[in-house]
Length: 114
Image 1: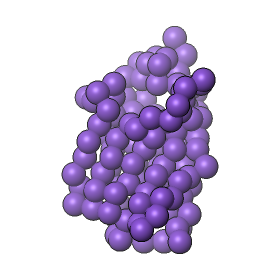
Image 2: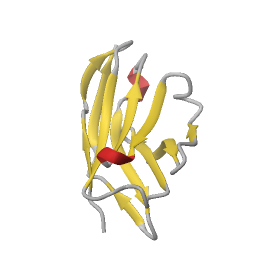
Image 3: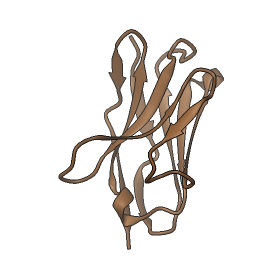
Image 4: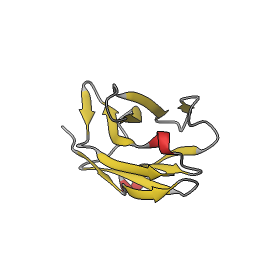
């Protein structure tokens, strides 16, 4: 069992930056796959970026080159650094981890104004 808590959402103007943190209640060393998802208003949840236990990453085309996912196993934390934010990045952002089952955070709102 692991609990995931997102920290760092908020409001920012277009072109700005935010860093989201996902803090786990226990070690994330055994959590092979971690990811960030987002759900824009009125839309389905979508994958933003993934990171595996060896640090391998993948990004949605819409965020490639602007967002960076990382993890710090020593601090039990995953991060999402979001640069050059656009209004279409407005969404609730969710932390996800898989360790024999799915684990989700409660979500954090990111609002980008034009």
